[in-house]
Image (cartoon, rainbow, N blue to C red):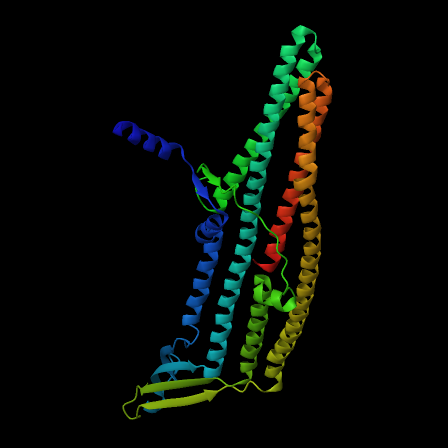
Length: 410
């Protein structure tokens, strides 16, 4: 008894497959997708640049001759022999320029973070679409197997009735052909299921051959947002956030360029060791400052500031246009989704039940020898077509929900 329990437990573990919910799949995509991890490395790269933003230029040192006659030139006086010179020079940047550069680099890192959110939003939408396609495929294969079972039953009935002259041989072959067609449809759907699972495994960065099942009890519901406006979209959409951060980064770049009007400093020290013992050692100590406000220098950074100002204006206009375009698109999808939801409700509560009853009545009449098999097959084909139309509409409905949720980043 104990052995049988252990064997049944092992058998269950060997053949049972992991059931992945939609939320679990989206979590695995967020954690494992290598494309998203690339953004993390890019952010770290930009952060590493920030650490060196306040660095100074390396000092310059030198050694050489100072006022030394050329070889072969006759020296009249010992003091004319020149000197050996050592020099050191250090550029001292303006602190305001360093602070402006540091803030600009920080803004670049923030843009990459927003890009990652936008990339994940696209991957999340793709994952949802594959998952919903699998839900549709599960419904489709259930319909197809049931329809195949019905057609196999009709074929058996036709085979039984044929010897008693209650049906033609052509009816047997017609039912047999329809049965094989149903088998082909099942094979096609099974292939689609395998294909979508491979695509989901790739998004989750798992082995492409990993097997899993989806939660077929998952209900896809559409609920329009009552607070949908440009303010809501501006707070939720990652591409708008990315544009906001790009505008902020451009403003910081303008501020960084504006700092070019501030002076920079340089310190130079030179030591001369005279070759003549009669001459004392000498030194030079100089402090220098740049004058960037002179017209021939200021023209460069002023024109750059003006150019970037126009670029910021263009980006802000583009942001407003994008918000209104997305708002119009999502409002349009809301209207269409509500209409499609009503149509699907008609399929579920009226059309499919009525056609199902029609098929049952036709089969009953055929069993009572009151109806020919071609009429029953017509009823079977009618409900078949209606079921596939329903699933095609349902798939379009699911895809539009994915697009809607992608627009509002839900």
